[in-house]
Amino acid sequence: MNNLKNLRGTVDLLPDQLIKWQNVEKIVLEQLARASINEIRTPILEMTELFIRGIGEETDVVSKEMYTFKDRGERSCTLRPEGTASVARALIQNGMLSNHPLQKLWYMGPMFRYERPQAGRQRQFHQLGVEFIGYDSVRSDVEIIALAWDILGKLGIKELNLEINTLGDLNDRLNFQKSFLKWLEINKNSLDLDSQNRICKNPLRILDSKNVQTQKLLENAPKLFNFLSEKSRKRYSNLKKNLEVLKIPYVENFKLVRGLDYYTHTAFEITSGSLGSQATVCGGGRYDDLIKQMGGPNTPAIGFAIGLERLILLAGREFEIPRNTDIYIINQGLIAESLAMDLSRKLRNYDLLVELDLSGASFSKQFKKANKLKPKSIIVIGDDEAVNGEFIIRLFDQSGNRNEQEIISFENDIKLENWINKNLLLN
Image (cartoon, rainbow, N blue to C red; front, side, top):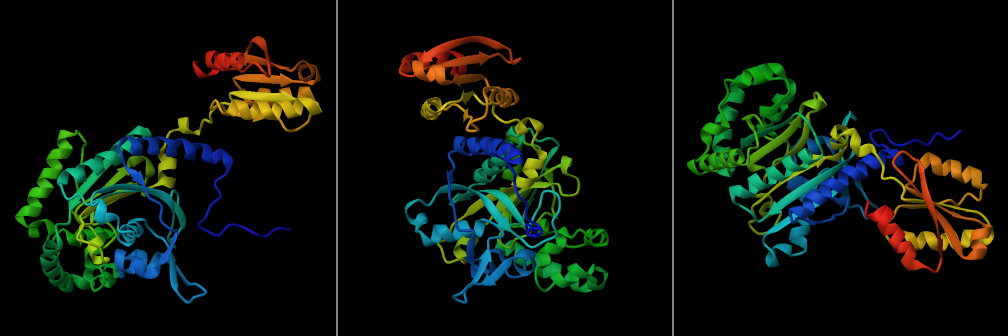
């Protein structure tokens, strides 16, 4: 008996499931191309130091969730838990910012975090990320939020809610943190244990604690918004005005701080009421200090990430429908089988979805299989057709009823092309 199984928190994506993944990804990639955003691919495996410096040593991701190990050279390696730090590293290492200080980039691929598996989130999960590098205008914040909103809308996802906040700049947060830490020390014993542990490590994260008692207590805590400079307030006001111009509805959530240390100014999340407690579909924000902290030039940036598993859960049933086979080739006999192989290659050059029956079964069994697939047309090549150097092609209507068949010579490419254009490509 075979006891080999996939690891907990990893899943096999089977052919039937991947139809929906591929259809969703196709829409996403079309939207990114229309927005003139270029793809970047970074390694799945990185130096552990990258994420300690890039994300922050005291974040939950780095302290609790990373898959870290030593390789044979005794180097500490980590399976990437998110994509932004890797993109920043690639930009710096490859000198991309010296020639092109403005970059719009996207990435898509597997990420790894050791946490409790749940619906829409596994230990190996897939993420789409978009990063606008070198842009400091508030318009870039608005454009990237609009891009995420439109991608989700294009996929027909319902009950979308946009939450926004401003985290100010580094000085704003330092001024707030002094006051907040004093308040935390006074109220320490009333906080939940997890929040107590965060006081010395990552106090801002206490603001988005899930503990009801702590949230009630926080109502009387100092507010970050009250420590914003005039410049930061004006920036946030312009963000809201621009979203209103684009008719993108939003809710202000001053407790929204996101989970990573590198955010500044704009932070946002898009949630869906269709997902229950795990409502966040997209999260992002501005990180003007990250690239400089990692040894690169002073470079403003903003980005977002969308979890693809949650996207698949939310996308409509229409994305589960596979593209119909255009032509199914039924063939039998040595010469017929060779001709069928050659013809199938020729037909695929027309961007047709062609299935060549390789079973060698009887004509009746091949016809049964073809009928189950419901192709738009069927080609039949038997001994008689092979001897005559021709094949029979039959078209079916949407109800599956057979239309008139036509006989075409293997040598008559013009007649074949005209038939394809008339019956398959132009319909």
